[in-house]
Amino acid sequence: MSEPPSDSPHPAGDDLLDAVRLGLIEGVGPLTRRKLLARFGSAAAVLAAAPSDLRQIEGVGPTLAGRIAAAEGIDAQAEIDLCAQHGIQIITESDPRYPRMLREIHDPPGLLFVQGTLAAADGLAIGIVGTRHATAYGLRQAERLAGSLSRAGLTVVSGLARGIDAVAHRAALEAGGRTLAVLASGVLHVYPPEHNALARQITGCGALLSEQPPRSAPLGGTFPQRNRLISGLALGVIVVEAAERSGALITARHAMEQGRDVFALPGNVESRASRGCHRLIRDGATLIESADDVLEQLGPLVEAVPRDDGRTVHHPAELTLNDLERQVLDAVRAETTTVDQIVAASGLPVPQVLATLSVLEMKHLIRRLSGTSVVRL
Image 1: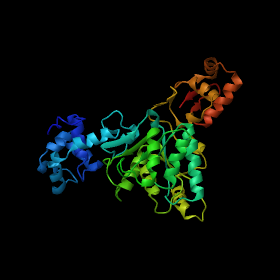
Image 2: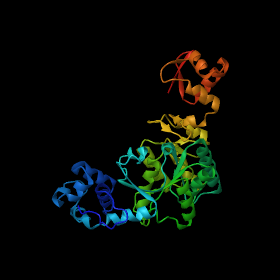
Image 3: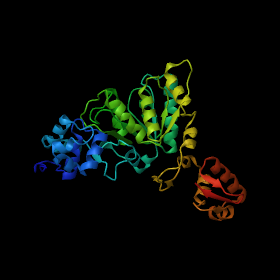
Image 4: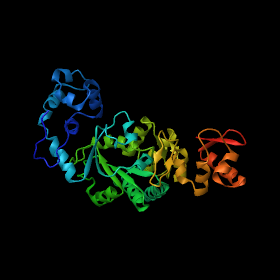
């Protein structure tokens, strides 16, 4: 593999150069990339492989094998320099900054181009999607849900599209929260173009993300491909309004396949924009009316998520606790804890502790083992 030119303003290491070069080869999608890496062990080994060996991989025909063999002609260093000039991070799947939730899906992107910042708190994210042709009702509900969930502490993920997506991003920003926009184009080619100003706002309180190179224009096939990343980054996906053939339903399908929760907001039975949501509800999606419905449904986290306030969250429902409820929950341990121990640790009177434990039990944060002992879930 050739070395980067010595006069490059941002010379990259060989591993990054190889990863970017492999990612820029037309036809090497997430699944093909995974098969190639599983067979050859590294991007450098894939690029150095003989075409005859490459063709043994399922999905790699003579044309793609030829492209991989000729990949040394791809100027990966120029792409890396472009990203550096525009403050774009290139995050590979082996990078510790790579979102854990996204790494869990069966077809994660090999490269993420990120403009803005990813934070540990983004492990508590909710996708909000819907039609581009939203009704006044849909826009109002998207704004209400995104604002409430953002104030509760969740990061709002959407696709920067017209309609529901844009409203969800704006509501999160207005609530002082974080939001991630996943693009079907490159992060330097914002689509639709009228959302350029919104995109700049998002980079200040979250990030733009794409698996496409920064200058890539949006193509028809990249939109449904993008949708799997929206659901992959989130604990669950809310569909606010969707026609029967809406792209939001593709996101919901990806969420189901990825084991994420799917929520749907009911609408007017005479509205075409609500038919997709009603179909999702018939198929088993959770009907929601408020942010509380979402927080109550989301299950315990696989990993605890650190917050900016220094606390660690084990369950999204913890985000809605008041100071008293938090004080009692902090006194409950993972092993059996008696009411007397909670009273001693919290310094609260017995009746207040008992009443608060009932609230925590309803929020599925603790389980009562007996009349005098509980355990934290």
